[in-house]
Image 1 (cartoon, helix red, strand yellow):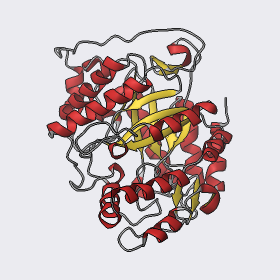
Image 2: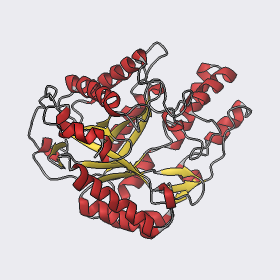
Image 3: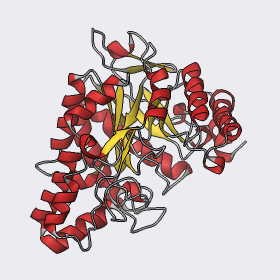
Image 4: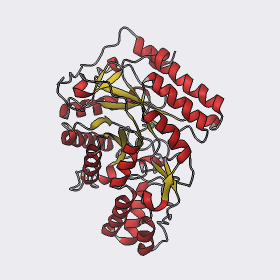
Length: 400
């Protein structure tokens, strides 16, 4: 038993004050939790299992999966601004974003039988340098949510890059503090993260197609109570603005790395885990053991009374591994979103759509070349359906 497990089970733990959520009824897709299930109609209707994918690479590029050689989003923005000025830099980034994800991409996801998209976003799009909200802060998010709603697709709002970065990884958009970031222990960045979640919750508190708020993606810059206490601060900030939406809390990496929700009085929460079996990526026996070990962790070692979301995963190139994992997820009634919808690299096992759009060299390409190259990043232009993997996924997403 870990120290954290012992702390959770200690009978003398003083539980923090519970924030009660509002229970409403009505014919609505609005999700709330009911024990280990999510149900529509504010938690009183039918069980909903979320099956979908991520919009990775749209609002935060990673060079291994996106058409850029930038090591992170901040470097891309800073370099383009230095070379061309802020206005032109944002024109270039907006060109990429306008092109990379379009209305037809929602249609493709819907056609796969999926019912949810996890939307990774960063503070770069939303906050000015002084921490205030940009006038354009919600333009991308509003558009994405509205297009999803038209197709009856749920959206998970996933803060992939918090001010200062919660992990120092490229997928947070900022690698200046490698592997730890500069969020935890930095009062200004923590305040800005709280402020941004307050504004998001305020704006979307009544939106029925928001499945939940994913507070921090892979917050590896802290662990234990340091991480949990900041999660609690974010949870309470959101609840003051929005008492009803599900709040999603991520582990790094396993169920044992999150506390029992009663320790903080968290209600209407979903716990999220990212399952990547790196040690032997294409070995079916290893991947089966890896998936089975997660079932044991969830059902026996923790057994928390909350729904589960596998927020990111891939089973790499072995199709039998994909089939096995998705069958287990279905049997366990776990929700999931694959990583990810589209990636560079034709045939990569990481994407439902893969291709080779022209890569931008942020350091030497001319403005004209950058415009020309990023104009090739549309799915129709440079990506094709990853048939073997998508066919397996559809066997499960198209089930009732």
